[in-house]
Length: 230
Length: 223
Image (tube, rainbow over all chains, first blue to last red):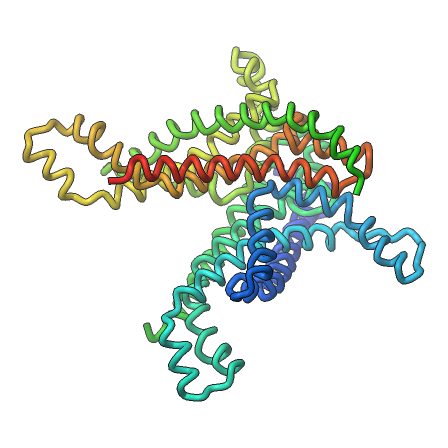
């Protein structure tokens, strides 16, 4: 128990900060994922065959390839790609991207593919009459989206988005391979220096369980809020 | 784009595919039995057994697969009992540790899939069996299980694909599966994009085959 205490002798405070890091990466990745979903969902629903193809390849490739491989791609290829872009603008110094950005970006791209599918499904299951009614009433396109489609879509999407959040949260454990000190990496360090891997990995598992439990509680509340009136 | 690296890494990655497929098939094989066992326990009227099965699936679905592998591979070796008995033959091998972790993990998801399949079986089917005088045991094995398997095929297909992606984590415990070999080639050649295309292509091909195989099975066993 002493190993888990806060302060200089224990690993409690380190694990606490690592937990905060995991939460920060998960939220950032989720938001990056939303950003990608915002771009790719309209492409998926568009009538243009080429745009369809682009969006479909994004979701198929990301959902069919292991997360770890995607992370390795960005971890080893990220700074190279940035330096290449920078060299076009005449900047030839070495650029190093920090692990937080690489991590949340790669997890964000993965989470974005799942979010895209969720939003597509949600929009498609909205009754067509809703779109037509809005059109007939002469409501402007963006108001139609924000005031009519969006509220209905969110209600349908939230249960599935909570799954995406769980996947994202668990996927962040994989960025420990890039050296970012989140729960998994901190447990690895602690296990290595105390030679007590069983304790620290069990604590890590427990922290993840608490995180998933708490976030499910929170999401259930959101679900109730958004399904009011139905 | 460096095509020679792609060409030279392809045979290495293909030979690593064998390990990925071995890990996948063995863990799915054990996972089905674990899943079936826990699905039955979950539907048991004994509240202790059903709570236990619920707890099992909650813990394994609520924690990352990486933690589970690390606990089994690094953690269990710490317990005296595992090191001194015959169990050590299994638990000292990263290969078997990975399979145990994968099987327990996929077992948890499979048990949820099967449970919901059992719950959605129309009671009429079971009642029809009873009124024909078929014994409870045979109703379970010959009616409930086949119907449940058919119902859970689409969800189980997804689980197979998720598990295939999950086997990439075996590379974190020193196994050289596709991802492990890919990482090795990337870190020695510094050509991440080329290697990603080849390795990702192999994974996508396997996803494609699994997806179509499940579709075929769905058609075959539909009624």
